[in-house]
Image (cartoon, rainbow, N blue to C red; front, side):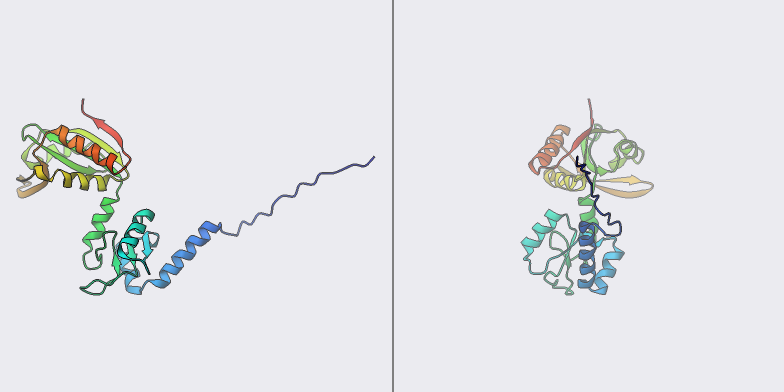
Length: 227
């Protein structure tokens, strides 16, 4: 009688071999470092912009690289048309030269920020504020303690959490522009000017906030709803 033995062959473990995705990632970063100039690399490092957030836009038209940046969630593009002012070739998603005006970097970082968008109301002032924060729990206390816009009866009426909070806040403030008010008030013996104040009913701002999220297909979660 013949006896058959089943032999199981285990695959060889290649512990020292990087996964292809990691290897390809490192290769892309290396190619990026070789393609960027020393001054560009220094600029990106100084402004805490990792190379994985940078797109090589060589051969792409403006509308093409802007679309690609949005799709791949890139912050900066290089190998673009040099700016007219100084010939720089680092631009943001809107096509602006970030080397001529570094404020565009902070603006875009906030636009891409995860956080809370809230609607606060002052009954005494008959005004509302739409703002961005990392946490809404202490925001009303802060507004009242500093007597923001000259009032100390601020209440957070509505708040949402979203990975696109910075972008949402910017769009809401723009869409409510016709209700905008500029209010000067005293804070710590210094004259301040609030520019995120609107003279409109709370429900108008809330409706616009929800409409913006749904129209632009931006995911959000309601974290505070005034009853």
